[in-house]
Length: 185
Length: 374
Image (cartoon, rainbow over all chains, first blue to last red; front, top):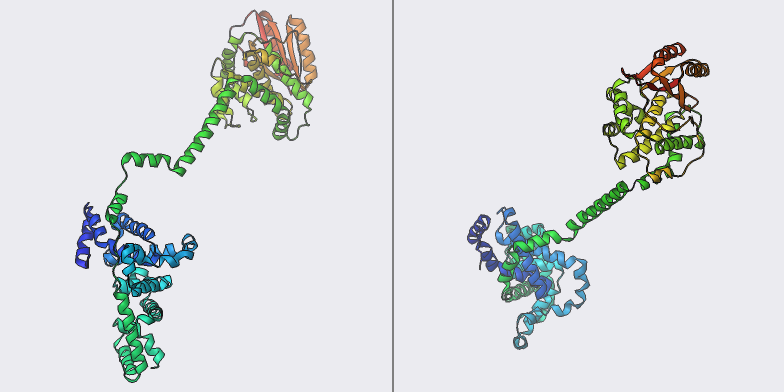
């Protein structure tokens, strides 16, 4: 995995020193993870790219405010999660929720038409099941099972209690188990 | 532990996030419950499916686009943006528009004395009444006709005025000689005497302005407009009985100013109001600045007026002008130089004579302005 803690510390130092290459390295290191969170949450590639870009621009502007108490990755996830949840709860976004059913087919937009034909029914079902979760549960399960954050990191990123992380994650997984029943052995 | 309690812990159990006691309790239940063991396995499989989801990759060119967006815009674009952003520009432009309009109005107003004069005439009558009441609440309410007559007298004097170049010099001499007296908040009166004005606290906000303008020998068009206003104020104050001293001085100052003001045709043609309080009589309304001016304080004014009339006749003097108000009479006399000394002696017998101007060198015909008051 890119951007391990030691690398993060070096990267943060370089960013603070104004190293012109540091920001580029940061974007290269975290682009897929930030974009992934945005895409899983928003289910729209264009919107996800716009949001991911906004995450990096905010980091670029506010690197001086990063105190280093949390990991750089946690800080990035925190910004991305907050922006996603804000956008999902905004009135403008709610107006477009009607057609989101089709947007859950995010896999189809990631690959070409030919590959889509070969995509397994399971994978489509997985993406759909994730997309159908409520926003608060979805962000927890995305950060945990897709991005691999610890309970503590999720609590820090979302600024919620550990117990809340645990209960939301449990509810999300229970929902997913129901939806994915027929794919389980 | 029930099955429900055990299953509530499955998520944490899968993540190995249970405390030792919790883990032991769940394990104990699972050891005795086949359904829960099966359910736990399904739960693990679900989580495994989630974790097997292929990671998302950012679109090609994403890094370049982010770097481009993060790069500061070229300075011309930043400059243009700072100049044309909506709200920082809107406010200054509105302010600039207001300033431009204000300056334009001021320039037009300054360049057209007729506008100033007409505005003054239109608003003078009610303003006069109100000010008279303000300054002299005990005074009988002045009638508009008397007020406007004072205005007309002033205008007539101005229209027929002569010897313009002598007036500023006279005014300065008057200022230098006049003894300090209590002022009753009358700008024109204070304008007469710079020393008095400087010694006493300013009674009106206009005072400094009046003083500074007074120092200019040639009145500007704007100055003339202000002089009109002051003339009206003088006429107004003539209607206020309590301020006797001030009003007398104002009358004198009115003479001086009206004499010094040029007489444009437009002003001579200005609308003439009905007759007003101070009646102006005399062989001519033309005004020549007096050589001597002063105040005669008397107890019986009518008797003194008769005495002065006799004196005038006896000494071969001529009364050239008279302004009568209920409170003060102003006589303009021409006295032969050789008779002047006796004239003054006789005045001193008639009342308390306080000359405010009396030059050492007298002309053959001494022009005297006499303010007679109680």
